[in-house]
Length: 602
Picture (spheres, rainbow, N blue to C red):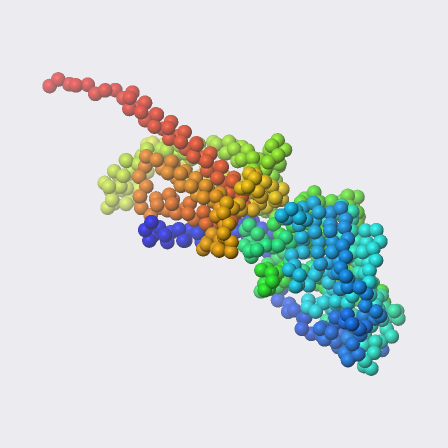
């Protein structure tokens, strides 16, 4: 390829790469920009002392000591009262969850889904390398650092796990105040549901206002550090992603973080961190909580996505707040049960958690139709790979009138090739006359120059909807097509892995599907241009540049998506071969049936 062809390929890669983000930008809900409200975690929490005056304690002093009840050298600090309970973690199970609780902070260190597997094991919803803080810790005030890591006692009652601890404030004399308060944290699970409740109850021993007040907030509950399952490459926004959504006044909006931060204090129905197949959705009670989303990198995790809900100051002597969290699969039948009170264990209604499902926005209706058809074929033949092939054949049959018109238009244009070359040579110095003559030629032969392109526009919505469906359809996760080769249609396949060695642009895997897809594109172009002269930069780019470009762009695409495009190419090749043979036969018949010239005597 010459220099101009290479430049064209590079520019096209940039343009089409932007186009592939259509799902997460152009077709996504209107984004909500992050507010400019500064984070106030650097200030010290204000704690109400026993005599009603305010005292200041540094956030890093709000951790309980495992070796003593309090630290008498830290006046104004919050400490647990009494002996320290056991710090041993324990497991609690429902029909859908395997939960590992940590008495330190009354937190959750592991949350696995029994009915969904990852490499044969229950998928882990808390992506944590063990070094990061666990989920559902409480922080003082609106702080998002230095959580309350006191050791809680606990008991289990039916579907409830109840944690409790009593706290006091160190006075100026270095001893705990007589004024104490009890913090009780209750996890309440449904037997078969992916939604559970966390009730936070605070009660002052002396019938005074609960002594937690930092910048107008009592405490913050957190989901962190990242929604599972884990990943070994930073999410790219197309094939792997983490997105933030907010539901307010019946409208779902996509939240865009500014410098890795989003803060808001308006009422909201729910807030969500959404992955490709799983999501965590926080549903607060009627209080006006401050919401914070953060995103960033650490040495342990490639990308961290955290969510914090800060509770305003409590003015009563006792108070109970109830938070609900949906932590589970992106499946409508599991999410929509919270629209009707009689369909779930908690009597919740009109939550519309299914809005957290990603779709191609205005093409969502078409995506749902294609999803139904895919499931229909799967019910006939319980193999999603075969179901994708059958769906591709059906789509190709429906689009046949458009494809036929496009191919016929292209065929007619090819037949005029010699005449067009003559016109170009004849009027090479007169572009105006050339355009006029070519227009007359098109009119005479009844050819629309755009006839080969316009029908393709009707296929574009189906292309977008199928891209969205096959890229994130939940049922494709873990679905096997061909054992030993395509064992998960939601992931890229691999025939050779030479990790830890990595090739530029390809990584540590050699994949067969992208090779077959690129080869099918080249073959399709060659067959469609058979009998014509393709020269110059445009011809070379269409023949080789486009397949090479798509080869690298789709190298790590899910197998199901590549399978669809590859089968579509092979069907198109078969159609083009048929059209070419029919055109050749007609040319032969026309030549044979021409009247023979008669010899005239002089």
